[in-house]
Image (cartoon, rainbow, N blue to C red; front, side, top):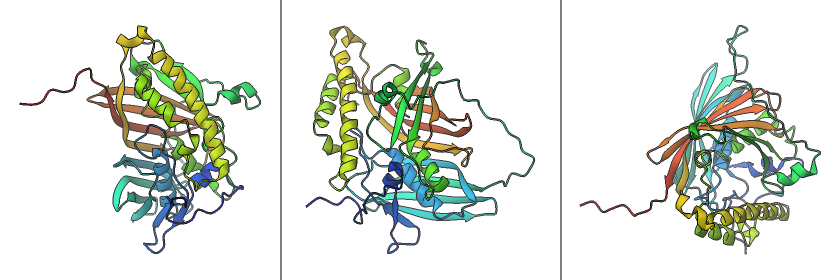
Length: 367
């Protein structure tokens, strides 16, 4: 009998909703408390990651908090800490605390717990719509000049990194100052969107949750990318990752529907192709002496500032630009700006994480 990884039996997938709406669906746990929720469906554990995809915890915490806030309030900031790796084999309980309800601002905290311990915690602030008055100070960073993918192009569709799998799709838009010797000068650009069409029933809450979900994609990895260090630089690590992908169904729980398994199989095939390319490069004897290998990379904290919560759709292309102004002491900092397809700055994000290289020699014992 299949092992259950959710608190309740997951309902059938709702075909009227976008895949990301199904992925992020929450179920109230009334027996525990009025503001407690759990993941309705199993959560994805990316290959090589220590736990579940962090964007899921971010997005579901936001979704849980929004259920306790009036509809004329929208989130404007969210500050998160990843405390422990989330286990995809165990249900998550999201506990919302109503910290303050004011006329213009509302504050909530959410703790995501497994085995009675917090694995993720966040504080969120919501503001009432149009509470700033008629006279306003306004300015925003302009979206860079980029060319968005042509949806009618079959060639572009084949090049999507998450082609065929996952609740959102992503496409490279290039790197500014790619050849610079200064990592802090580089800017990495992408465009992303949720697959399918987010339902009218989901409303702007669904779009905000989807945006929160994608903010964690490719984020802390920017630190290694601006240094031109592959995430899997070691041939041994690459082979291990490839072996893990030989059975793509391992990426899914038995409770996930056949449709989602088929999506993951295609995603696994694309990931395998990219890993094999990196493996060939890593095994080239000419590159042996140049290797810098990532020993550990994990997110510590994550902040999102939502600027225009009603001015975008997450199922339309959103442009992101990431940069890393600093790295040191085994950590790295990344900044991310996100624009709607119409050029409206909709969010600014920050993330700090542990970024440690493998050392040539083990540390000496202290005497």
